[in-house]
Length: 142
Image (cartoon, rainbow, N blue to C red; front, side, top):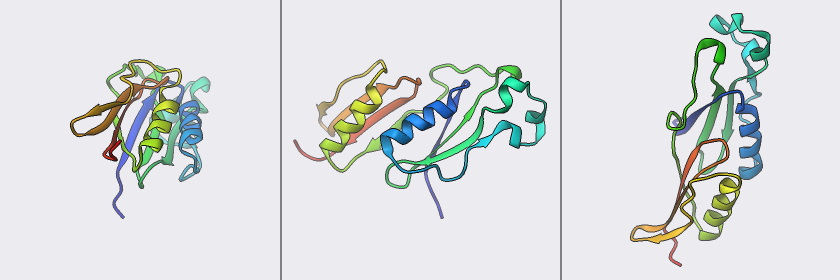
């Protein structure tokens, strides 16, 4: 079966981020969280401090979209910068749901536009507290 997903990288905060997203959207992780220590290959040589970090996690959110995530690793020279993650577009069926999601994801975040009437519908964008950019679109008339 085909699916659309977004894969996100975090620097040591994947687990925290995914538990937050689960509190916003509800539901459960698609599979158990896979720790880096459970994976093979170069990660087998990780420093002890990185072995318990998330290697892979999946969380269904809206309309069958699946969000996946992993930790970037300092020991491997990874550097997380805002902009090397992805903006996720959420298209809700109602303004009420759009407003609820916007409020929850904006909390503690920055660079929020507020929800606005645009020629194409009800729109807003925010950078959440984990540095992930979300865009909101709703075509329900006000």
